[in-house]
Length: 526
Image (cartoon, rainbow, N blue to C red; front, side):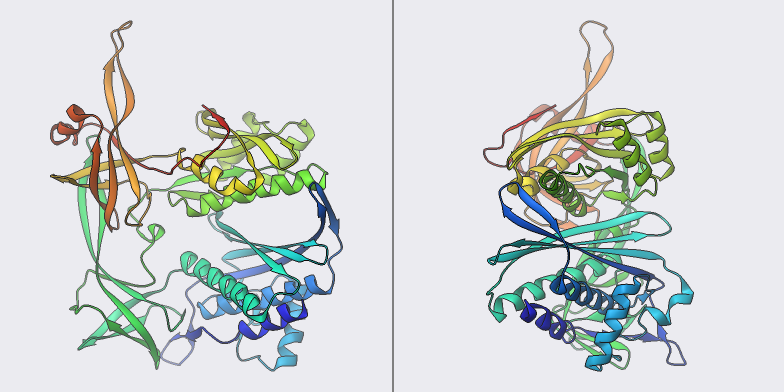
């Protein structure tokens, strides 16, 4: 394992070059954000199925804690963030390593130099090491960045299996994966934008709006932005159409600017949006997002049960991380709520006082897990969505699956929680352009269903009631920000679909992403 840590230290230092934006005096311009980094490590010994025991972290875990703190600090600094250190133990170890390796210049402005500015974000880095005798370890890495001002969280968990006798190439691959994941994590949380200075032949000369880090394999995307307006159920909404017009490659940093090679020529425009990496849903301000808090499982005191509960929580967090329409709210009241639930000895304890505490955090919905049980490595639990304003359960699923399949099963159910209201634009032949109010996806080739909120006369009361029906299946052929260009694969309700031209301005339509049900999944849902 010494080999693992040694390589991690070496490899964290040299493949992303930081490029800075400076003021007229040459002082570095940060992107306006600062982060306090906390790194925690835990260790468990696994003797067999259902045999998991908490262990005391040793030298390996201590060095991993320091190594990951160094890596995430360096990535943050390269991306233009000021680091405000709050983790004294890791900070002392990091400083010691910096002293030994003479790398003070690499991590410029480490925490101690930025303490006076405070933190706009908190990064919680949780490392869990599971040892399987003398055969291998499993390293679980959780990064959770939380906005101090809004409580919005981005949480992602990854797992790596590392053989005790792993080769240097295998360990290098793992470290490369983790570094790439951490960098993408920061790029998602703190996007880097540019302005176009000029073009010459197939080269674009760009100036950054803040400090950033760029890799030689990175791409810069150029979009033409246009505001369009369409009605959703009779009410006009603004949508951002983002048409990709060129991609820049082979980035080269030159005296504070960035030069890239263009695949297509472009001209200066006031409506250009230029970004390192492709545009994300969170960067399109006309999208709406759903504020949601997750109330996951708490500790039971049984090591194996707690391992299962943690894996369920992790599967939910990973699914929400990929689910673009959700703003995950980390509530300061969660600790109070979980303590109260523990006192009540029931994990589906959601009463009026709990609802009010969640409401105070800014969340609109609570995603709650409860009724956990397990039969060795088969886990069972209930997942519910509570509408805070109404205090009612709007969705509920009973999940029963092997612990190794939690990610795919939970992702399938999370996808069923919300659908996006849409405006319908052009309909021509087998192509339809729609504009979702909530972000759903951006990968071409993904499958969707168009749903229609159809008015039906209740035969008993004679009143109009509404039923959401599926009228067509489609494939995303092109993503232009909030404009989805869909290819119609199958029309399921010909009369309702053919009437879209007449009903699209007044009636309500939805878009739902189709996620295939995992094979051989034993479940009950309602």
